[in-house]
Each structure stands twice: as C-alpha cells, then as structure tokens.
Length: 214
Ligand SMILES: Cc1cc2nc3c(=O)[nH]c(=O)nc-3n(C[C@H](O)[C@H](O)[C@H](O)COP(=O)(O)O)c2cc1C
Image 1 (spheres, helix red, strand yellow):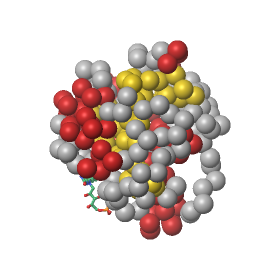
Image 2 (tube, rainbow, N blue to C red):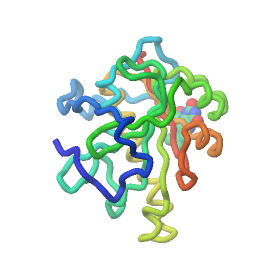
Image 3 (cartoon, helix red, strand yellow):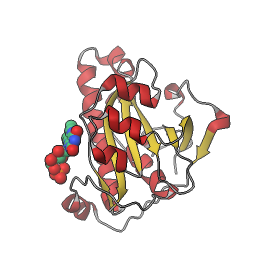
Image 4 (cartoon, rainbow, N blue to C red):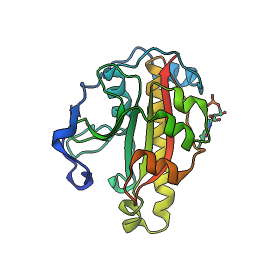
C-alpha cells in the first residue's frame, strides 16, 4: 500500500485534531472490469440502508487514492499536478458522523469540514435534484485550476476537466463493483455548492456524485 506523502498538494485546511483515518481499501473486488463496465448505469433512487465506512474508503480511494511511492494516484493527472479536491457529504454512513469531510490522499484520511447532515442544502444547490438529497453519501469534486495552469497555460483548463472525468468514472465503476447506485450530477449552482461545502475561493466545484444502496 502506498498511502503516503504528496506534500505539495497538502490542503491548507488540514487539522490533525479533526481527522479520521479510513480503513484500508480492498484490492480484490467481486467483479471483473468488463462486468463492471457492462453493469454501469446511472441510478437516481436509493434505499434507506446506510453505507459502511469501508465502502466510503473504497470510493474515495478509487477517486484519488495514492498507488505508488512517488504519490501518484488512481486517476491520471497532467504533469502529476493533481488539481482535484474531493469531499464526502455524509448523511447515512455507519461509523461516520453526519457532516462534510475533505479527503486527504496522503494517509488515506478524512478531515472534518462541517458538522451535520448537509444533503438538503446540497440538494437545493443542485436544482433540487432528488437523488442529491437521497444518496446515503454524496461525493463532490472541485478543482484548483492554477495547480495545472501555471505549467500548461490555458490548455491546463481542459486538462482539469479531463481529469475530473477520469476520477469520476473511477468512483462510478467502483460504486458499480460494490453493488451501489450512483449518478454523475453536473447541473448545480457553483456559488451555492461552494458555500455549502465551505470551499476555499480558488476551488471551483465540478461534479457531484450521490451514492446509495439499491
Ligand atoms: C457531465 C455530465 C453531467 C451530468 N449531469 C447530470 C445531472 O445533472 N442530472 C442527472 O440526473 N444526470 C446527469 N448526468 C447523467 C446522464 O444523464 C447519464 O449519464 C445519461 O442519461 C446516460 O445514462 P447512463 O449513465 O445510465 O448510461 C450527467 C452526466 C454527465 C457525463
């Protein structure tokens, strides 16, 4: 396992007293990649059953987990500059108090951002799409564009958008492989999502993925 340092991307929000170390991810799923691709379908309604912390761990590892000693991750990144940030809005997860958490790839851990179930606020910010309020947990991707554009200029904007697609598909396929329902949500008000998640000004929200048991 390679879950260690990538110092240059350490979030300024990191606060050791508010972190939760996630269980180690599992590298032997039940389904082949081909079966997973065949089964992938957008799912917009979910049961009331909670997700487990192990499932959250697996989904976040798929999104941006570190997979080698240099700090490279599950999803490709132009110049290995890693512009993406990942949040989990938890409302029905065993062993994880309701709240918003920021995923820290280094150490595979969560840092608490906001306490309490914020799914209704996120639903309102997402054009009241019911799936956003009903997922047991909701993953939110944002990006800090300048991490990529300082090197690649204007083209870096395209790279960031390509990268969030890679990371989101990783999450989607991981959800399918865990028999969970998920959908990609691109329709939302950027400023409202920024406010709900308590993002830094330089972070732009890009995609939302509600996830739940079917
Ligand atoms: C960039 C992007 C944005 C999307 N935004 C939404 C959305 O806001 N709401 C929604 O219900 N589905 C959204 N979708 C999901 C598509 O509607 C869905 O992928 C499409 O209907 C094909 O169905 P499938 O995913 O089951 O193959 C989005 C998909 C993508 C790739």
